[in-house]
Length: 434
Image (cartoon, rainbow, N blue to C red; front, top):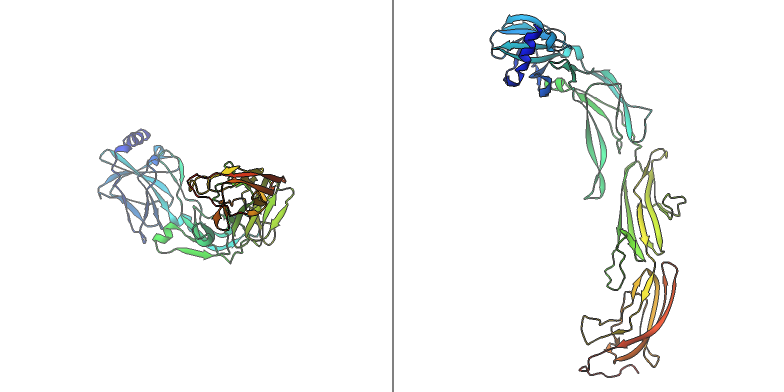
């Protein structure tokens, strides 16, 4: 007999996958599941109650029947040739041989695996803040079937555990409530899931077979108060489009001071305590500044590297969130002054006198003619002198600047020098500066 079964298995690849079993005497339809081809089984069937039921081959013809268990098809028990046979009360496999081919099936008697769900309760003892444990009072054992080689496989009951949590909506920049569903293969006393980020109830329902038979079970837990904390953070730097400011391309955040950055955090429901932390040490020991607002606009004025992160915790302080670290690098200062420019002569080209600067946090510049009359003054290093005095271009010649400034690195600048205005001879010049 074992040899005959082995021969039947050798041709399994050529069997008709459309052949099925028919079930007689069933109060509810048999649920057919298609297993992986590697199992050697054409179908796994689940019947509500095998008592008083019989099976026949879909063609209605008499076939040679055998039955096997956990040892596999090689140890099958011959049942004889018939159009139908009585179902066993035990879960077992069946072989239907016809026209020289063997067809393999496994039949599960659901009466051996009744599902009951009495209650679902969030556990008082949580493993950690990222996982929530649920105590499930009920029964619904693991359903196992065996391949033709005797390998055990689990047939998932597809019990559904559902609850609400928060999911970040990047477009709206808010957390939105969303239902989460988790599939459970079978009932276990304790089930752990990702901790919800909002207060919610847990619902356990199923299983897949009871749903087909219109007898689903569903049990809801008491309201669960969340303690898990999460946040989404961002850092947005205000970029200056200034042609005379020296660029520092290496730093993602920072560069030339003063540097304005807006730090934003969006937190979940349980985040009662929260703060932005600023430190000069990457280990945040010590923390130099703290801001409890979720949105912080900060101006970096000092050379060096500052580390910024967001921290949040629940009311008890047990559940915490620490966000990514933002590294802001402010470069050393620099201030260079040109000695000539050509207003009027070439519009758009060297027609303003501007300093070249980087990380200048304090600035004051005065420009005089040779008689000591102040032509122009300004306190923003990005500003330039267009060569005008009282709305009119000044004559070509030599003018003088005096600058007092301070860099982000603490360096003091006291600069003075001459400015040569060069103009085309074709331009009529009238001295209006005396």
